[in-house]
Figure (cartoon, rainbow, N blue to C red):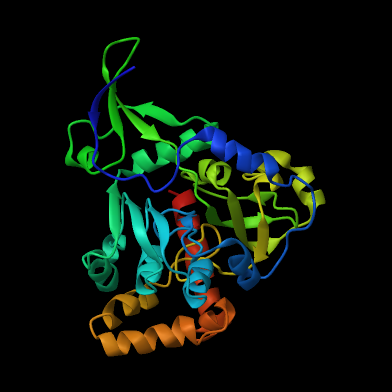
Length: 332
């Protein structure tokens, strides 16, 4: 296969599937309880310098409780997969957790606006960037999930994104057409928030998964946060509803409302007022430091965080809003 063009970006992970296979071969596949509290899971599996990826899409089903805990524990020097990163990216940027980012979508909080703190950190010169597209990062996770060093695509050809990526352009040996080779991406650790899981890590996700299936297979370590623990008997009664199988999972953490202030499909809507508060307070650095102390550093856990922003009453309101929205959609 003839390489026609080489991008200028640096790969932050090794795409060699045999090296990844050596790791996965040593990983336990015992069907044993993996339940632990979130603080312990982050301490055990998330380390300075690791490559981190998180599940969800935009502000939907994003593991915010885990992002808070990573910042609270002071992780630094990490790499991050900025695939559809919104509030999660804002939190990690505020804590200056990462210094390398594979960029597809970052800094923006979709229709809510741009994050000043994330933008300032990305413009500081302290973060190394390799550029991709959302599909490009999805392809990289898919390659890793397949156990191959790359996946061919017709993505980012003829763009500046290719130049700043870590991809290669080759001539297809069958057709002679141009193809982009997207290198496999094996994160050291991933965190995915799910609707339900048993103690072993068999997990159910309702609604869109986007690339979380591929991510769960690509990550060397996988932490699940879950809205609720269910019995293994329930899993076995409907095995086709299992989105992530237990043998991929290292830790199961029951954290109700772990996607707050984002959305959890069929569970609760996003807290738009609090997300706007995050954006507004960043305009004053002194106020923002106090805000981070109040909401993350001096906040012992996610339940206290929710209590400080309306508690059960607020979550009930957001749950009713989500249920009403789905009712309206189902009735056209």
